[in-house]
Length: 185
Image 1 (cartoon, rainbow, N blue to C red):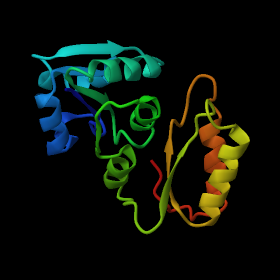
Image 2: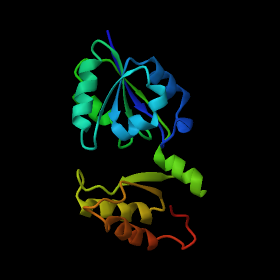
Image 3: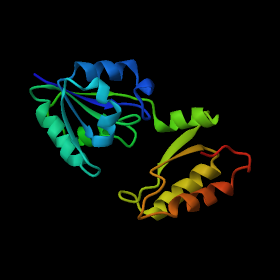
Image 4: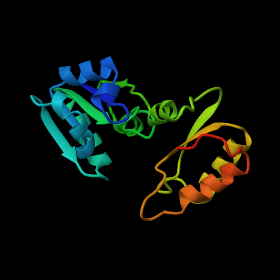
C-alpha cells in the first residue's frame, strides 16, 4: 500500500525547508512537481523517480500523484506551504481512497515578513491577486476590507502579463488606510 505526501518545500531554498519536509522527500520513492520547484530540491531527489511539468500542469500532476500513490510512497511538492495556494486543496478534492498526508511548509508571507522586518502579528491575511478563480472586483473588495480592518496583508500572485496593473491598484487601496512608513515589500 502506498501513500501520498503533499509537501510544502518553503520559500525557495533547502535551508528554509522544515526537517519533516526533507525527511518525507528523502523517504519517498517518487517525487512530482512543477519543474522549477523540482530544481530547488534537486540535491534531495537525485536517486528518486521524478516527474515534473511546466506551469499550468497542476491537474495533471495531482492526478498522476494520486494514481502512483496507490502502490508507491509519493511526494508532490509545492513552494511555501502546500495548503496556501499550493497543491493540498486540489489533491483533497480529487482523492478517492488514497492515503494522503499534508506536510506544511514555511509560507512565502512568513519568509517575506521576516526579511522586511514586518512579522505577521495579530491579525493577518493572504490575498491572491490572480483573477483566474476570483473576479477582480471581489479581489479589490477583499483588499479594501482587509486594509480598513487593519490587517497585515500578504499579496500572492501580484503580477502577470495579463494583469500588470492589479498590484498598483491594490496598493493604492491599502495606502488609504496605512501610514507612509508602513513596510512594503
